[in-house]
Image 1 (cartoon, rainbow over the protein chains, first blue to last red):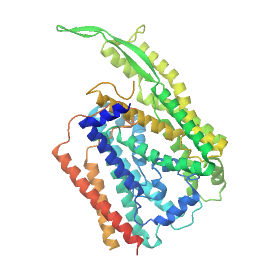
Image 2: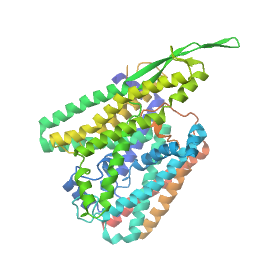
Image 3: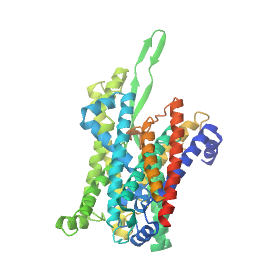
Length: 432
Length: 77
């Protein structure tokens, strides 16, 4: 394991890529701590330490931005607008026929979709930065905070400058992510989320130690490690459907005749269902924070949805995750297309006729194997909520739910990519 | 002083956005975001891209310096 690390750094090509990625991450973290001009840094820090990160409305989004959101830093919005834009464009691919044709067009169509995603990102960044600055000015960003976190004297012009800066910052993050994808290791977007979440780990762990003492602290770490093992185990799990390719003679050469397999992972959808579900459930809270605080529906939403320890919230969360898992698997893996491709190149699943029966078979296996996958996603995502009610811990329980799924998923993927690059020079990598 | 820095910031922010948008998007879709395929694109960057990179980095540096400057000016006046 360690020799593999040493070897990764000895390979000049790989070393350059790794150092480049580390450099970009450093720039990203620097921007996440730099306050936007106009923000009163001392006041906002006083507010955050008074309120704690626990009962914030923006829990998940703040988690994704590594705590930068509540500090109103230059990179406050983080990678979130880019993700939201990608999700929207991906979903529109099902609804709007033009997007559907673009998606099937191959490389040029994908490039066009990417360009749309980038425009949409900037639009979303303008909207979100305006919203967040407005909330901060109305003292509603951090609950129970009545200090002026934005200088009053900067006026409307100053607010406009803040919005422009935050939008520029979000654009810059988008570029940084693309640079990592292009010249570094791994996928830029996921690496940046990974760093944001991982950056929050030490402080929230230490908060548990300060609040509860050593025994609980050690127990949390043990539970966390066990969870990581479980997540790795299930993420690696796959069913291999054997595919046999017929031999063909083309000229004097013999082609095909190989037997391979289609890997169907237990969790094909990755962590996306969790992100979808939590962003959907966050909408009522957001709407309530804009409504009048005394009306009945606002009170109901605040009682049931804000902290997430209500049974109704948990049930809804679980149900949405299962729904989105199936939904996303249906978008990304189309049994009809796969069986059609197999037929074209003379492949077949032993014992099943090519064409429609194969598609039916693949669909059957897929829907069966996704059920435990979706249940697993739902259960892992519910862990912080359950821990919240049982242990009386904070909802941003560091080793829970979304955070652990993203960190482990991204880590596995990146290590696999480093390994495949290592194998171009010599065998034996990190994973056996 | 503050107003000058603010004008510089607005201009550089807009320029930065335009420059980043001029780059060819290489982020790819969501499908390769979490547990996706290995889509390492070959083919290096062209001269145009290289120059664009340089300009973007230069604007980014000006932007960063202006932000730090405005932070300090607003803090200590």
